[in-house]
Image (cartoon, rainbow over all chains, first blue to last red; front, side, top):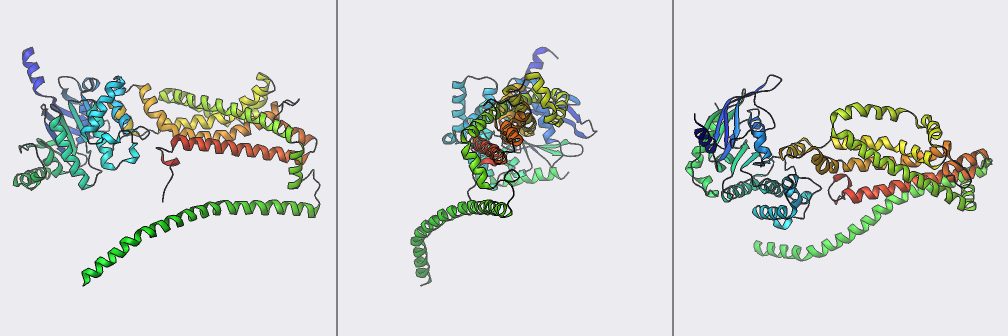
Length: 261
Length: 293
């Protein structure tokens, strides 16, 4: 394969896992032969029961742990290198906001950690707080906010570094159903507005996965592997009416069936 | 007909709801005042009963003053020697403050140093524990030999006694940062110093404040102990020195007055540090938040 061919394949896949195995030191096989090819601007959900290796996939992509076998490339770089280039951002189930910092300071944290000048940081913070509808709360402390608002701040913090890859690990898992649906809609709107951002989203919730994603990766445990890849070709922008369509029910049925394998 | 009734009823509750809430607000205020009173009155009553009983029983039995002085004797001894008592107390105040300040500065910075690396912590912390287990009165004479009698030795003894609570509390605080938060900092490529400065030290503040509350009263005790072994006279002695002098002269009422002053000093220190801790943490940490129920 020539040099240029290689480059093309790198450009085509933003995230690439080739036959990745992960065995923990205690012998647990967390992942077996996982291959992934994710392109620019995709919204990928990972659905599966606990212990199916969803979190391990995330740790591998984030470069927090190394694969036992196989190859991982993030935009042609190793995961650790890609992270150093600030191409990735993270949102967890826990909002992980610093309780002693204002909303604005929390949002600027990733930027100040990499030494961005203050003026630029403030501009970015204003931009992303506007995006999540919290610009009036920039001086508030996290404890004054509701669970949904804290999650919005957490998302704003992730977006502040203008990531090419946004990793979300069950971000709405701790929220009530109503807030959850509102935030799903907002997340989709933001993803469509921020052109060129790929989202990887871990969830237990089949409805959430089908509502948000362009593709759903159904994972099964012991050993963790990708059982099926299901495309969700329903057109964007999606809104509440999508829930009521026959296509929606069909996708949900398909994903649920794959989970039962 | 039912509808009319309902709307009337809601109309009535609608109009009455405001006065009711105002009255309940007033009631709440009086209740708040009453709870405050109920917190002050019982200990005050106990104090009066105790002091009164002490005075009466000692008078009645006729115990000699040098064995057990009456509260009135203690009061007289304190007011007769007020200026020298104040001078001694003032001396002790400064010794305690210096000792406390040094224990806070060295305790916190020492803990930060240990916290930077697990290897350093593992190799040095055991010796800090051993240092703590040596009784302070056993080291005190050595300190006097090294630093001479007077202020220096006393401050060092006050520092030594308050140092370990600061060190260990801060270290526990630095090491109890949530794993999720630490992961976040790792994921955003924070350096070790950035994580320390931006995450671990702020997260340790409640622990540091708790350590300060322990150390501030210990510093007063340390200063008194220091004066026992290293105190010097000539108007330069603190409360500990005054106690030893009063004891040798059997001036028991003055001895009591000095002891009580020392305890008041400790209480005042504690309240001051407590207020500082509230001011520092009330905006974000649960331990110092006002709870409205």
